Amino acid sequence: MSEDQLSYKPIGVIRTAFESPDGMPIQPVGDTAVEGAVELKEEYADGLQDLDGFTHCILLYHFHASDDAASLKVEPFLDDEQRGVFATRAPQRPNPIGLSVVKIESVTDAKITVNGIDVVDQTPLLDIKPFVPEFDVPSDVDTGWLTASESTIHSKEADERFL
Image 1 (cartoon, rainbow, N blue to C red):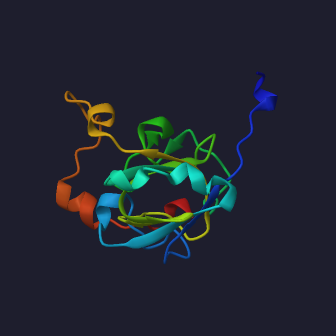
Image 2 (spheres, rainbow, N blue to C red):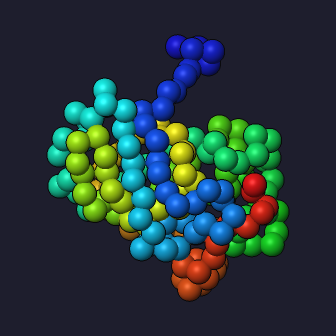
C-alpha cells in the first residue's frame, strides 16, 4: 500500500461540554469527573459488543479543533521550553491524531458514556481499543523531560497556545 492510499474515516463522534480546547483538562487525569459520550455510527455499533466488560478504553481521534499548522518544536502545557513534538502530547502534529484513556461508565447500543474526557465537542472518532494494563502499562518507565508533580498534571488546563 502506498502513502497515497492511506485514508481514515471517522467511525463516530465524541461529545463533550468543551466547545474549544481553552480551559479543557490537558489529559484525562486532569478531571476524572468530566463526563462525555462516544457516539458511533450505526454501522459500527456491533463492534461495541463485550466492551462493557472493561473499565477503561483508549480513544483515537482527529484533532479537528487545533491549528492545522504542524510544528516539529512546541512549548507543551507542562513546560515553558520548546520540545520536539514527538516528545509531547501537543495537538499540532504532522498527523493530528489524539489519544485518550477514559473510564467506561456504560455501553448502550451505539453509545459509550465515559468519564475523564479531555476532548473538544464533535471530535471525529477514529478507533476504540480496550485498555489492558498488562498490555498498555510497562513496568520500567522514564518520563524524559516531564517532571511535573502529580498535582500539577491533575490541575492544569489547556490554554491558547494550541488553539
